[in-house]
Image (tube, rainbow, N blue to C red; front, side, top):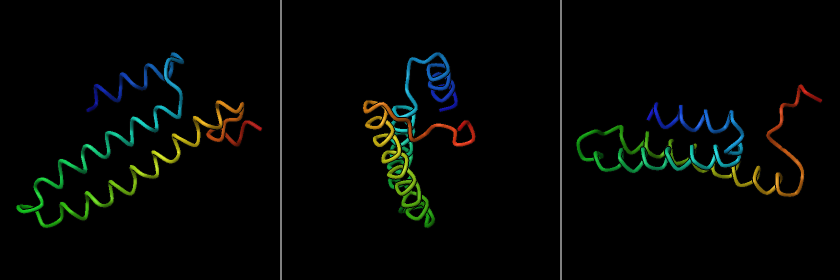
Amino acid sequence: MRVLRSAAATLLAKGNISRGWYAILTAWALLVVAHLLSTVADTDPAAPYVAGGLVVLALQQLWRGVKSEYAERAGRSPLADPSAE
């Protein structure tokens, strides 16, 4: 997972991937981990709760990514650094 994150960060730094897509890919990775945790729910009693938390975080990241992509296409950037203004 660290290699994938590093590759995505490198692409983001080079400008090949937007912040919105980075958030969407992060959401996808969180959903995959949540699914994997849900498969061990019968042996680990905490797994469903952790998986549920990851799903909530994934939905937040997905919303942020989609919102950012729509704003970028409209010419705005809601993920811009507020201190830069």
